[in-house]
Image (cartoon, rainbow, N blue to C red; front, side, top):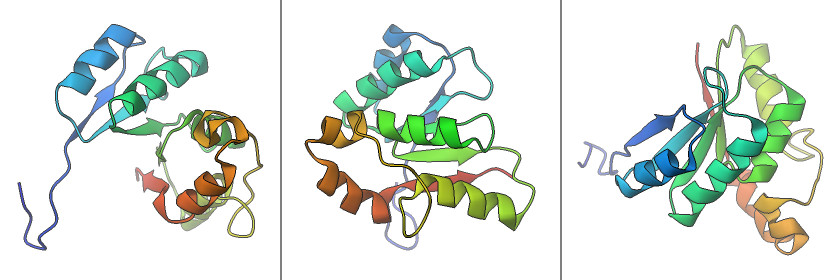
Length: 142
């Protein structure tokens, strides 16, 4: 599908079951992106990391819907390799600015630096640092 502005529409879906088999089936369905839902599912952070790993192996964009604006959750899912976060229950511009600051490294934000999967455990930190400046997505739900 091509939109009026000549950009291809992207199509994705949600993963709400903590099943690696279901994740692979969803990856094989041809989606452009998949959301790991941590707000309304029983998926743990440990399971989320493995789900994100599977999604990335299939060259699909992984997003994570976090349960709330929580610094510890945001930095952890981004370090796991999520390429964006979906923030539910946004009530104000302050909420948006806070979420943005928590997902960006200084000087644009206040995300702490950790060496994890997203940065190939430090082997590609500089590449990740430069990539994330313009490529991490913040999606808000009002």
